[in-house]
Image (cartoon, rainbow, N blue to C red; front, side):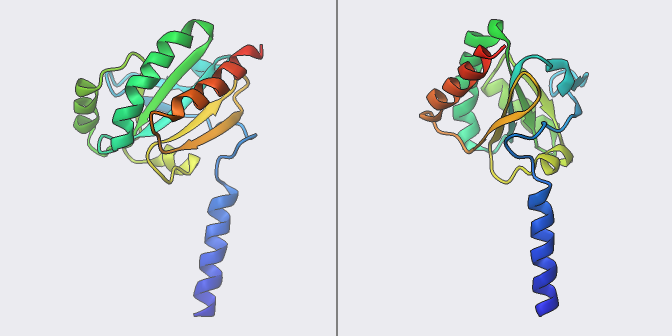
Length: 163
């Protein structure tokens, strides 16, 4: 029993030690678009502030966040802000149906095997990472309620002001 507990503790430590954290470079990726299957890489957004959002079709807070993030994207895009949403549904059709009901103008990718979500250590839905112009994670946000958008916008505007 003691050996099992030590192994579990070491495994938990290893996962935490590899978690994406504030102040670290955001892990790079190349994923297909949910809409067109064409590949998109994080490095395509170099020099921009990125709101990287991991979501799923069954996520109730995601239905709240998407319209607000879309509005924020439209408002701040010209200043160098991008929203990149990464769908974690194993079935592409579920994500497509969600977008029919909740359409957005920002980039939507898919990580159907959850490999990138594992790399970022996504442990709740949605989980978002605000990445600065230099590719460094500046904020991690778990969950979403309509009241969160003001705090998130303030952080994004602060980062946009830094050239």
